[in-house]
Image (cartoon, rainbow, N blue to C red; front, side, top):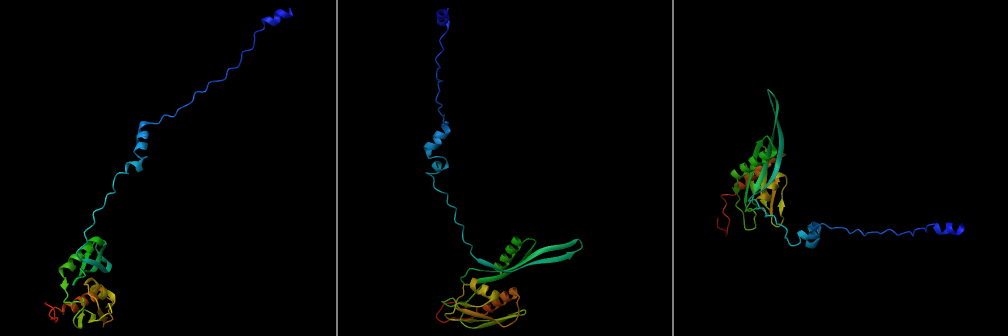
Length: 208
């Protein structure tokens, strides 16, 4: 009985190890192509040259604002605001002018003032060293100024008079305000008026 029972017992099955299939990552063609070109944006732009911006043409005249005010006008419907601008324009070669403009916004007021300055420009009668031949004095409104040569001293001036002399390109020159006026617009106009008096001066050794 015991022998038959032992012979009929089935043998235990041998455990089989599971088969692991390796997973291979699939790279898209687009990425492969990018990597071949040089890796993204760096590879694409490797052979290209950066675009150069066209150099902006330098304006003929330099300009500097000497006064910017907001003006209020009371009307029946309320208040109206506008901007008043005074500026000096010059080419630093002996030509200079002062202009004023008024408009509802600042850029338009500056444009009007620049056009007015170009319209009223003068050419200063200068020496070879870009100075003036002699002293001049002028009066405009409440402003009064005296402009004189100052050899080897640069520009000795203040207020808007200095701005006029700089944009005119003058050197070795000095100016003194004889009045107590602090109106920068009037001080610029009186400097222009003083420089205008040099138009009839003949400079020795130079052709006019």
